[in-house]
Image (cartoon, rainbow over all chains, first blue to last red; front, side):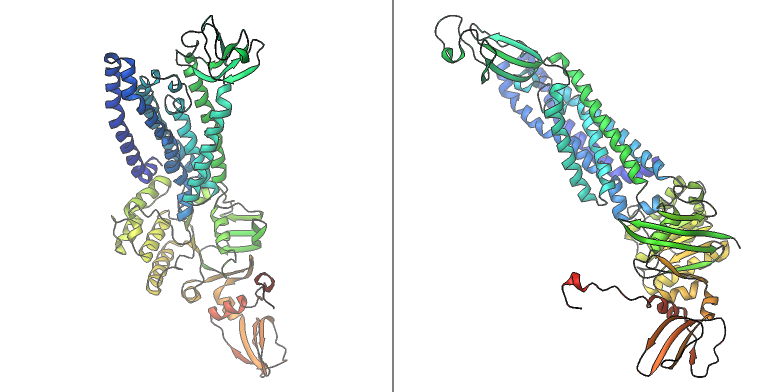
Length: 301
Length: 292
């Protein structure tokens, strides 16, 4: 099975390695020069020079999805589309053996790939994460492209592709199903589940006499909510408001005395805990999908 | 007599429709059997049940006395060539032979290589670039390399031209004559079957219509032509009437002496068509929105 799996998938393995190499050609030099300039340039210049790279990295979010589309979806769908499943499943090994060997070997290769990718980008992103509070490594999108979370996404995407291939026996519709499912689950987890992995910390600061940045913003935290509240806790507006300690201030009449800025944050030192939780969720989903796929395979003909 | 393949009340249902129903049959060892029937008669379903790709919804099927579903013991004894002779098209023939060795416990690679060499199949060309006939030969060589005791072939010659068809069947017959392998071969090219098969199974509408030794079947059927309204002896399989005369296909064990009938011998092909032509096609004028 090892030889067969390698023989069948060696071309896509080659393309994947080439893709990873192309990414490295971009990431390694820019990463090194960022580290150099971070020490020599002042923060403003550094932000001007490299700030746009952070936006470029948003494109990298699709990498796990691409792996799912091109490694996962065709795995079974192509066999069924070409009828070759009837050839390989009637040799001397069980379908369960066949499916587990294939998923295991490809899954292993994909994990190695995703680890290199995720940890490499975590290294690369580290200087960029200090430019702007909205772009810390903990913020949405940037959290998703580095560390161990992409490993979970990649495994999940591949498993989803494999299951899609057992549901619709053609490669292209299986890819479409994978795409839809992946985007849906990823968005749902990021928007609705992730903010609640741990109880957020409230950081309050009086509007009067506020100076500097509110607590928490400095150390790479994930800011979930920023709002201004009156002394009795009622909501005034979104955002942050600051007034000098004495004298008139623009929002006085509306806010009244004792108004404060209210922030909900996930402190920056929870980054890795959140990464592992995210990984765990997607690995569990992937395991469920693989189980489903093997079940389906034993019923197809 | 030893039976290689036995089915009892075997049935398989897809989305509420029975693809195969109440199928009871016995395939004796050492025969080359033809599985015949119109499209959708359940031929592929029966073969998939026999090779263990499908699990029965009703009744049971046994191959060498065992249930074949997900059973690697029986699977090792069965060589199967699915419809359209699927093989990995980006593999070369040599790589396919090598693959077989990896996924089978018993594998005669030399047998496969010798066969392919005799047929002049290029070993290092992707099989997707071979002709349909050559690809079918590769698929057959792979099935034979398992040295199976039962060979199941699902319309192996359907897509081949007449010459390739003849070569394929000749290669097949040559091998099974030496090894004593039992063969079940589905096809709707009837002329080929008459030449190569000695046992017949006719499926229609998911049920077995006729089964038995080809010689017995041919000997047991007569076509009678005579004046209208004459009653024929034996079991009437099919009758056609014009104003003046009747043509009747009967199954009978005794010779027909009634001089009113002109008795014709039947070829296997005519006989099978007689059976298959009997059922009235279901009409669906309502669905088409046209008057009946």
